[in-house]
Length: 307
Image (cartoon, rainbow, N blue to C red; front, top):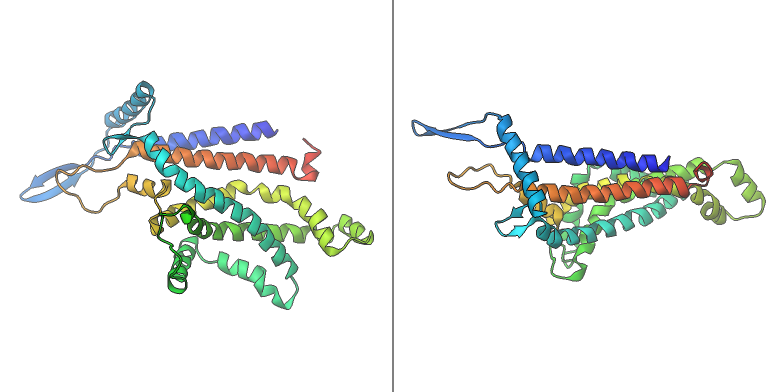
């Protein structure tokens, strides 16, 4: 059952990768003509051009064992070797922050339930989650710039430069885990085994950490793939807004979106690099999906018996 789920996820992401390749090499050349001093643009789809684009990419990849060359001299693999490690530091740190801080925030939210200070628990979690992640990221950056100007938020010259982007990226995933944790613990409260544990003289703290939370770990970690998707989606915005030179920032440059067309200027759309970066991000999400399946199967005592 577990192997089947992992294989299903693997093939699903393979299909997603193939769709990305098909989208990247979709013909986008415009026919530019000058009519009475006015430039006119015309687009016509051609299956022949589409086939040639795909054929050229796969032929080059098989013959040269490389996805291609960017900027005229660097291979896609060399570019990934420079930019990807910068993003991996942010992704890994944000993932750890999201899981650990999220669980403890969820415990705090649960403890504040039915108290006068409940607004500090689930209230703050729901309120912040109601803000779209894009505006939440911008708001966080503005708060840091305004009230903490001594923090080098736009600097990337030090080894610790990834910490601030990691914290910003992890805000929304942390609240996501906190909400799940609080809900799961609340569902466990009132179960018969809780009453038995308390009857044995165990304190509320011991019951919470030894029994209730233990039964929740598997379900919490089963959301690792969702957390990773949130992290990567936020990473795209944070790296671009902060000018953090990671893989997501390089992805925006590879897209080379421009509203200005200059005659004779080559469009810098780097399809091969887009495929390389997308593949790396998909592998990261796939690994998190595998972790989710393993956690769901082996860390949940109730599901472990059925394996």
